[in-house]
Image 1 (cartoon, helix red, strand yellow):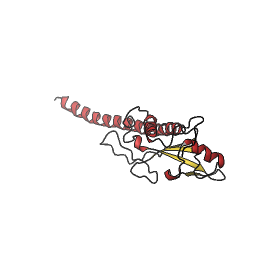
Image 2 (image 1 turned 90 degrees about the vertical axis):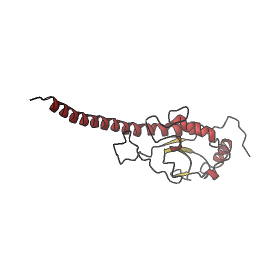
Image 3 (image 1 turned 30 degrees about the vertical axis):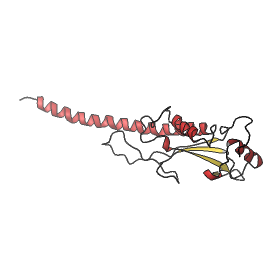
Amino acid sequence: MSMRGVVTAEFSIVLVWFMLLCCGVLELARVLYMFNTLQAVTLRAASAAAHTDFADAAALAVLRQQALLRDGGGGLLLGAPVSAAYVRIDYLALTSNGAAMTPIAAAALPACPANNRLVCMKDPYDASCIRLVRARICDPADSGECRAVLYQPLFSFLSLPLTLPTATAIAAAETLGALPGAAPCP
């Protein structure tokens, strides 16, 4: 009696389980990679935004790409669906006692970084004085609140009901792109 067919059948069953195990380990490693990398992306974005003119949309777009460790277009390497559109930068003011951070609406931002210096020198707790810069990873479909991004598995046959963390980093507003001796803008 030949055992060749039995060995082939057993090998195929073991191979399927082994491949599933390998895919699971790779997916778990990717989840950990995403959690760590998204925090690094927000740290890079907040740090760079503290030195970038908040009124310069092109500079902020480049900043978002560079935060994703990319020079050109494209998303986070092995991090689909995260792209530059997922990096949200907010400018924050401090309340009068300095305990609470409040986002500054785009319409209330100073006209330029030099004007921000003047506003902050007059009253550091003014509602339009940019004191902090916050970078977060948010779903771009929601422009209001910052919703978590759904995790997209590397292997389509694996279904993980997982959301990525809304990684957040806050940096002190530094120059905001103001040049030394820059005159206030109109």
